Length: 237
Image (cartoon, rainbow, N blue to C red; front, side):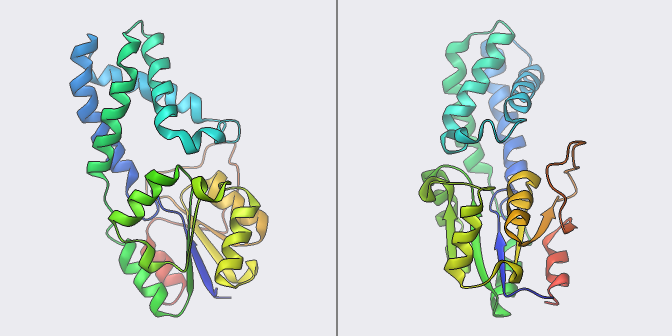
């Protein structure tokens, strides 16, 4: 049965955060590596290692999502300390990364085409995004995302983030549909898929041809897609 509403995640669903991340780390590590006396590639790998370990248990570290700058500085500090490098550069490195990520962030080519098609079909829409208020509002305003949405739920504003049931229930109330009549599209199996399924939404995992489920998969999606064109096909748009 086709839905009456479609909910979207923001980062790595509508906006290409992964490409911005890779570009930003390349610039920042090339700058800070020589200052730390380490190869840029090595610096990137030790930060990646500590970041992967830090965020592995998303439930345990969920409170850091609204303090991403602070969390990133913490992770970089752990990486520098583990390698015996100057930890006083953790904060400036983190700030430089944030600026580079913002500069490189772009919407996916299929993002607004899809949102426009969904809205033209008369479906209700909502944006459900985790993270700090200011950071996420900046993205929404820069790329004019709000005009495509009937509701926006930001973790740093609402007080809770995905996969909390309250986030999905609030969005459903805002758009005036029941859970069975809504689809959720997102790249995070824990937050987007797990949270949506717990409330009764049809959960769609978008992997952008770069993500693969880990062995201890936190939730099984109702549908997996590589790109938003497949969502339009599923909606007969």
